[in-house]
Image 1 (tube, rainbow, N blue to C red):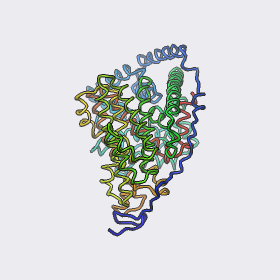
Image 2 (image 1 turned 135 degrees about the horizontal axis):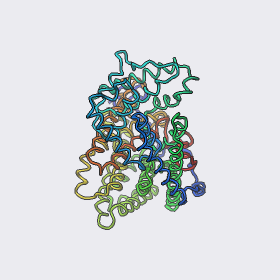
Image 3 (image 1 turned 180 degrees about the vertical axis):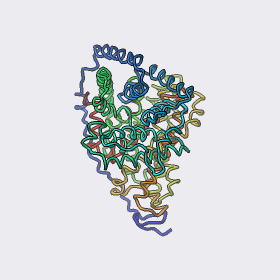
Image 4 (image 1 turned 90 degrees about the vertical axis):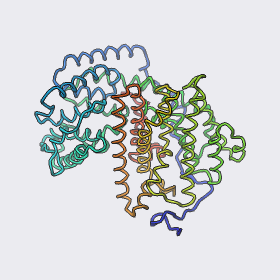
Length: 572
């Protein structure tokens, strides 16, 4: 087939120029070992545990005293936003059960007084906790012109209500046209209000930061633990702010940060002692960013082991990805891939490999064996290792397929690309470690799990991959990397980059609907799976965090640095 240049091709093949060793020119790691070891805090002391328990009991009493429905809903919402839900799960569940019973037994809907804020907030909280609620009542607040019926008042008083509607619209399922319309109407109304409302007046009532925050990325797509500090700032401005709840949120954050500091120090020592950084200097050295991702997936203190395992997994995902995408020659990649496929018997394959590949193979196998033993113990070690190996091998094969396309100058259709790219996103590898580390059920039910949650794993991985493509396309184009989903769609349909980006954004939105369906159904019907399902949805959220404003792994000193400073360095 005739070849043509990348930016004008309407064919499936393009002309490419290959060097035996390419470089992405990644900057050196900014998080030095000695700096990480110097981190310290006072919040690991026992006196703070006692104070925390005292403040928790004080806030629990508020549940019994409050009778106003809106104030109760907002209390539950703030408790979750401030990262305190695990301290009040019994109270939250009890309240939501009572709200659901009220809705079901009363002939009057919550929006009888046309209160958009109550209706949207109630819907969001109930659905987010797996209750079977329909969005039908929200349709009453939408007009035929693509706007919310509420008029944006001069003091911005209704902006808060429309923001709540926008947030609720992102919890939609496939086929819920009302929520699709609600999203469009809310965005249109908020953009109109931004132009018409007096900004000085708006900041006195409903801080316009909240409107900007929701328009930039809805809270349902954000890592909740990464947002705690922002919500603390917002809650401190609330008219009905409870000072005890505010103090508790700061104390809780600082105590968890103390735990994360200790874990990061330990992981930094592991990475230093592993002694492979120099041999793998071509790759991104991103231990701290990997830990940030792991903490985003599983932030609760009890998941210390999962954070450790996921950090190690993500470190090696980056190294291996850089070997396939950037450093290795195509001729080296086939024996490299085979070395992993023949996991137990690799001596022959390793003889053909350069030193850096041998180092990578040995290190990954050692780490995987270690994780398998820590998860399965002596009894289940081999069974856990079997599934971990299988996931890694599929990851390597997907990377090899992409390298083959690049070497041939081939641009696949979007569907062909995605059928491989969801695996190369590393989502399946990460989520398998999460499942095994969270649910602790390694037996014949594994096959049932792999079948039952295949759609969830696929769609979470799809979000990770598509966010990655949107965030890294500029840098990858400059390096001359393999075609992304955007390029595949542009080439297949003959459309502009702008239209291709919009199409990929729409695919992310549709993938989230499928994630929602699986997550909300699991939380109501299969409570023992809820921790894993929560971590799966958090993995998709981490994808948004990493790539929202560019390449979060490639560029260390911008947005991701702020997240890391907030997460493990700067207390509240």
